[in-house]
Length: 404
Image 1 (cartoon, helix red, strand yellow):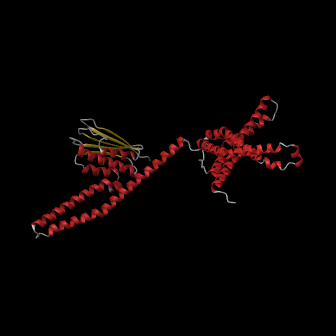
Image 2 (cartoon, helix red, strand yellow):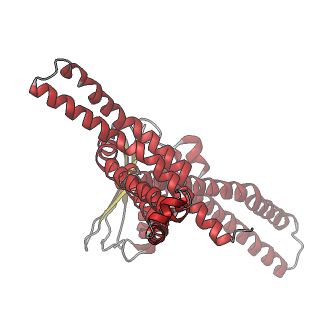
Image 3 (cartoon, one colour):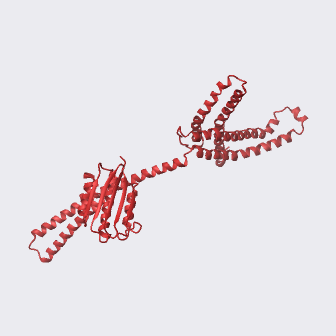
């Protein structure tokens, strides 16, 4: 006879639940038996009825301590093998959670499991009452005419009891899973700490990937488009110098194309330096910022005090902050005549301060450029502060962590 798929799944689930509960009963009740043993020995010690009780009392107490830790691994195996729930391996220092489960919660669950197994056995025996009736002698059945009615009533009660077992077993298994995850699982603080660590690692990976992509774009532009433009500018310059017999209109076109090519090369150089300057990798932040200060459209007083280099990501953020800040000063700082850039390192903190003598009034909440600076600084767990009262001066302070 073929068993319907739905009934087959229900039987498989019931078998798994009963095995899970049956395997948990002895594990849950071990600590109760040890406590009872310790209680009897303690009572005999206090009453003075046994001279061996004080010595023997050490055994259940030691076993209780061992059970508080050892039963946790047994419970992890039971949850993983029978329910597919993978509980984390708790550290030795997390004794409160392990003792709470194995000493307090476990015995209560063990009693519920024992009652459920007892109900299953009693209900199964009662359901077979009519079968047991055939086992008694025929003469005894004749002498007890109400035996069949009692057997039928008992069988009906047994079948009703068996009908409740699957739901009760499933409920108890769900309860154990909830309690097990809550007590033996990952705590909220550990989960939050792990989440923070994962986000930190993923963000660091994203920052490194973005930095590597900027390096690749800078290299491709320098080795590809920039070289082609330089070659084009050279050819146009050579044509302008050698082809002197061309009509004036043609010469003007060549001169305009030569001028446009040189401007395109300069713009491309600025773009490449803004992406990731090669001097930053080769000579460090001091040399890269010196180049920025030299190219700035207003006087810049630069002071760099770095006893050692920071990480590539931190140096890239610091360079980007100074570059964007000087660009903003040149474009938006009204009546600014100079800028001061100070870069220092104190322990594990790289501090960048940019100040100008303009009229102030800058607000990071209203400018996309300043918001980009804030996001770039926060990508490496840095802090961004800005003071720009109306009338000036404006000061931007950035602190970037750079552990040794």
